[in-house]
Image (cartoon, rainbow, N blue to C red; front, side, top):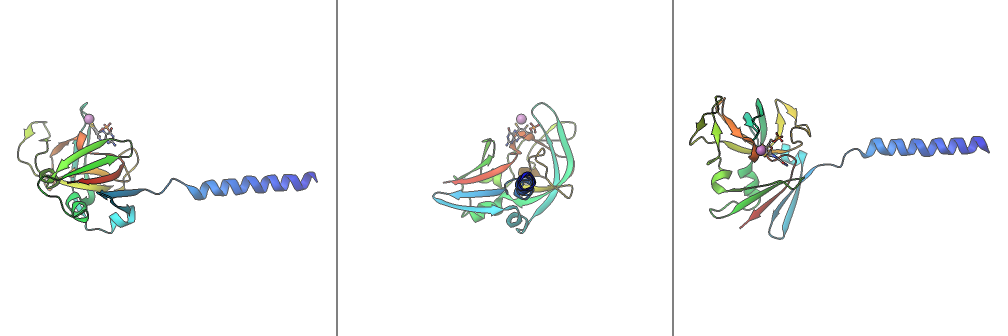
Length: 179
Ligand SMILES: Nc1nc2c(c(=O)[nH]1)N[C@H]1C(S)=C(S)[C@@H](COP(=O)(O)O)O[C@H]1N2
Ligand SMILES: [Mo]
């Protein structure tokens, strides 16, 4: 009797442990919303879309520099196209899973009108950046600490251009088209 209950307790414990290992963290997905319509993209969906690879280098409000590194992701203009395209007066609302929100218009979606600096932190004017949903940094999947699995990023063709960190929305979870 005692042996039977020990075996059943072990069975229950092992089932529980296997359950824990199998469940893991919930799978990430991105909600794209336009009016009443919603679409959900997995990381694999994003990785199968055309990508852009370029230079990433940001500075936080308190002056911490992250980079330089090579970032890879899907252009925000390609995401906007999936949502029917971004007109002159439309806006994209880009949300992090913590509720952080960054709003861009069609000019910013095309990479203009961002604050950029050279490596001496002298402000540069009229620099075009390439805004992407970044899922890779220096060839590796983005960590949670770096805003992964997917972060809004301002990449550049040219090296040595620093962008202002507040646009780099971490833990992207939802993008809404507002017309
Ligand atoms: N989801 C999310 N993304 C975010 C933020 C945030 O609070 N939540 N802070 C922004 C700001 S203000 C900066 S400067 C950069 C870098 O912030 P960190 O140094 O706190 O990582 O991330 C940006 N992305
Ligand atoms: Mo910031």
